[in-house]
Image (cartoon, rainbow, N blue to C red; front, top):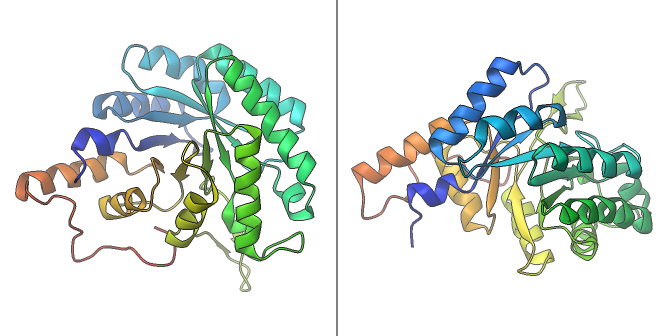
Amino acid sequence: MNPSLHDLAKMIDHSLLHPTLTDAELEEGCRVAARHGVASVCIKPYAVKMAAALLHGSGVHVGAVVGFPHGGSATEVKRLETAVACRDGATEIDMVLNVGKALSGDWPYVEADIRAVCDEAHAHGARVKVILENDYLAAGGAGLSPDDLKRRLCEICEQAGADWVKTSTGYGFVKQPDGSYGYRGATEHDLALMRASVSPKVQVKAAGGVRDVDGLLRVRALGATRCGATATVAMLKAYEQRLDASPSDPAQPTTNARIGQGGY
């Protein structure tokens, strides 16, 4: 069955994470999220109190990032960051696992790091999305192939109590041979792999590079229940227009669909 406009909106975590985001832009972003009835806003920790006030009664969750964007904070700092975010009104936490420890194969550390955040969040009634940052795992690590490493991390996330596994931060830029920085974000391959690597009780979130409604529909088809996005208004407007134009089959991709093996 094709999703309704409401169903599609409730897949979106409206991302308000750019380093230069001003208070005015944050406020406008929250108003956009409320107006379109998305699942949540995904914001930096200092902004939680403001967003919670702006979104009170809207049905839009306030999600805060923890250990963002590189996952390198000490576990106790991540736990405290989670506690403060929940105190200020966050009901969802998007944490970045410790990528260096993952690449080192220090599985007990990685699991304890995730568990500390999950336990703290769950004690406050919040849910947790754990970000793998797959662009940093593209060469594998800890003696594992890239796919086996991602599978192992998904399994650890589930063991530690995660509610979602998430592909990317949106800011995991990797230095290229020519010195420039590139980024793929969510890919079809990784979404399918992650969905297959956890049980049905753990959900999957796509993030990074989903810029149009066809990409959003594709990640939904691959089993993602949430998608981080900045192009929220454009995507929902395009889907609404598609519903109006072809109400019997609105989920058919357009001829310029951007779906492939790379990022969306």
